[in-house]
Length: 235
Ligand code: UDP
Image 1 (cartoon, rainbow, N blue to C red):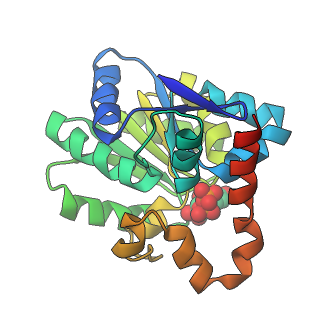
Image 2 (image 1 turned 120 degrees about the vertical axis):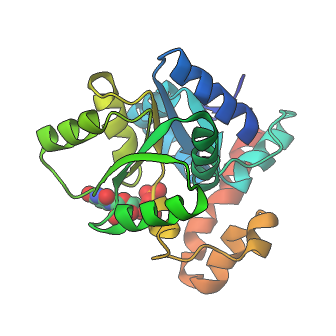
Image 3 (image 1 turned 30 degrees about the horizontal axis):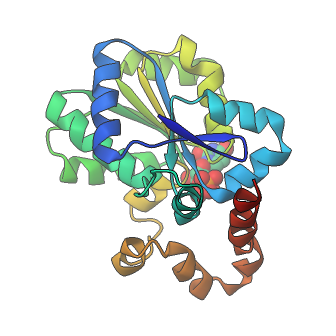
């Protein structure tokens, strides 16, 4: 079940449905790729066919960002709940812990994935964390061997977008994990190196407002949201 916004697919599943589907994929030895979609990525993909193809190749495109929810409402679609990359990652960790599946953390500056690992071990004491690798290791053989020797069911890839999505698509066929999720700066947040917007803003779906207040020079980037909604309406 997917909805399409300006050429980009977004799946209609919520956290619970995605985490269950993923455990099922692992059991079936099916490879799956999860990508977070927001208005910024959709607008970029509109001009960039290869990015559009890349995003549409994913198995689960999650509606990360209030703009996609608004667009779905405008189009009479059924996406009502945001699924953010970091919250889905944490929900997957919880489900993996319950089902005895293992995870791997690949990406971010040296030391960050290890610090994130320590935090995840606190939150999910029985979670199997098969290994970590920083995102600045450039030797393809080392990367491949480190991941395959650890042999995890799930890998979270934090290289930034669209580098992580490109990396996932070009390597998933030769790697052990069943599930691949691109998670951007999530390890920086989980490790505590970067602070997320307070819960109030998260609950209101207004992290954009928090960022605007903290970093007012971003206002130009945020003009993208009304522009995106206008384009969706015109369609
Ligand atoms: N990063 C990395 N290797 C690189 C470039 C970036 O591991 O060669 C990491 C970086 O340390 C950060 C993440 O990728 O943890 C990118 O985070 P950002 O918030 O920029 O993600 P995006 O906004 O692109 O989702």
